[in-house]
Amino acid sequence: MTVGIDIVEVERIEGAIEKWGERFINKIFLPAEVVHCNSKRNPYVCFSGKFAAKEAFSKALGTGIRKLSWKDIEVTHNEMGKPYLIIRGKSKRILGDRKLDVSISDTDNLATAIVIIE
Picture 1 (cartoon, one colour):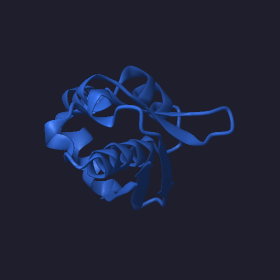
Picture 2 (cartoon, one colour):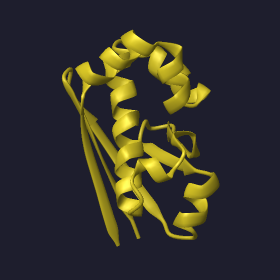
Picture 3 (tube, one colour):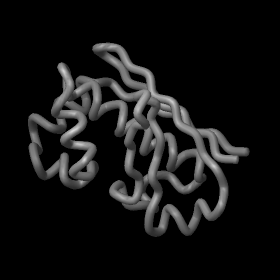
């Protein structure tokens, strides 16, 4: 079993989106993730949580995000709102048949995520 955790200051993600706009968003997030976050009261908190989950996954995998594609990791939610990850591409090849779980938590200022790979 491996664990990855990440914490993100919402202000940091908000600043990146303000500075780089669609360029930043399209590099990191899939269209469904963008739609989901833009439907929220504070999209920056949502984007921060998804960013943290992707980072936490890369840490649990042991590669770090620089070895992976941001878009190979999709953060989505079940009908009850629980987040889960859809893994594709190189990330999926490295993950193999192992199971994973993710949890995301946030405040107005911070978002954190933990990923456990079994």
